[in-house]
Image 1 (cartoon, one colour):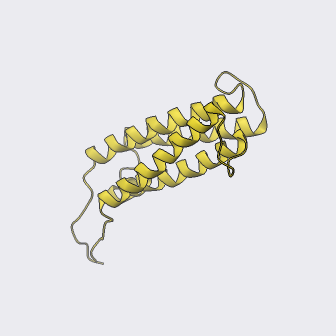
Image 2: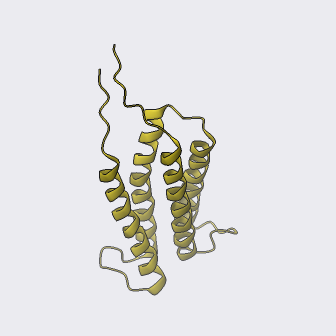
Length: 137
């Protein structure tokens, strides 16, 4: 059975567009000029977490294709993803602690962590060599 891989360039375009959406959301929250669909910081935070999860599917797909589930970069990605979710849930629940004093700070924190995770994913894809050989059942 031949393994068909999605061209990296198509995934890269999608991730870049989603990353630009994330930057736009952080900028709109910080400036207070929100588009009508994102009328509150909570809405922006929910959309940022959802878009981050969509971006993550491209990275986790590469990890699954290579079988590198226990590589240090993959584990770091899991930890960052968990931290992003924790910060998002904490802000939405109204919890306050060092990283989350209000929703706007949580948006910035999530945006920075998403950027770090994107850079990490890019490094991981450069290091990994996806399997392109055919397999038989």
